[in-house]
Image (cartoon, rainbow, N blue to C red; front, side, top):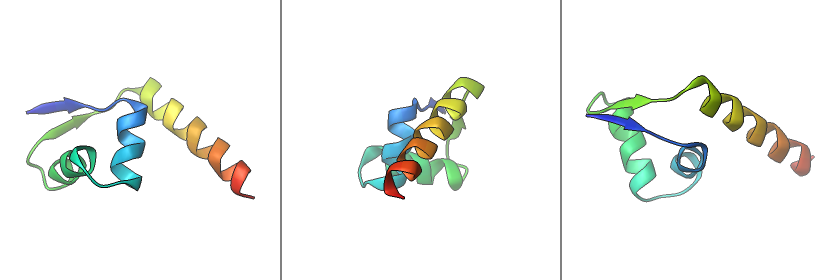
Length: 56
């Protein structure tokens, strides 16, 4: 099965519990194929950098 995460779901998978985290772990274990586009990864990076600036 192929699964596409948008930026919000990707962030949720990394910081909360629930379905996004479950699917993320299934992708790590090779049970499903996680599909991420360049645009999603760029947006994820932008959001993470923004949050890191706010923390400092």
